[in-house]
Amino acid sequence: MFPSVTMSESSTLQIQQHKKSFDTLQVGRAAAAIAVVFFHAHVFFIPERLYPGETISRVFNIGYSGVEFFFVLSGFIMILVHRADIGVPARARRFLRKRLVRIVPFYWVVTLALALLLWTQSVSYTHLTLPTNREV
Image (cartoon, rainbow, N blue to C red; front, side, top):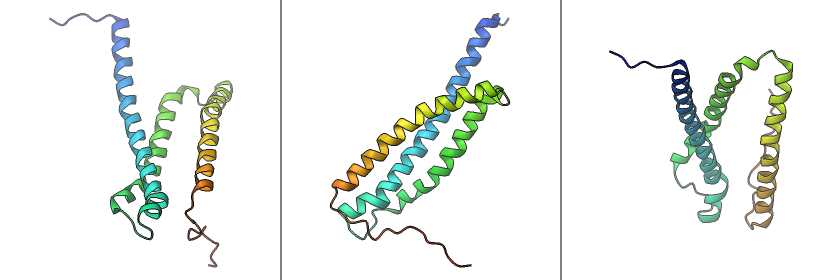
């Protein structure tokens, strides 16, 4: 009545289903990251270059929430993937090493590229100020 499925075929099907689920979650992370990029471009670069003192569209402000969504989803994925590694010190060192190798070089490339971009631009960013400590 039903086709027989061997154990290895069943495992393969489960792995494929999990991969599709992770791909969908990764698309969500990518969408959140792109929204954050558009938000920052809208707030810091595009208006000053094209329309000084104005905003282009309030639609780009939704990118502000992309940071929270990205980090919550990333944390969920890390826990799901590494749940068996929790409490195993040897795996913690491996995890941290892999994260550092993956993140630190990209961080410095982007930081240096943005520093170079800001250094070569003629736009003044003196109107942007850092928050100060307020007396309570």
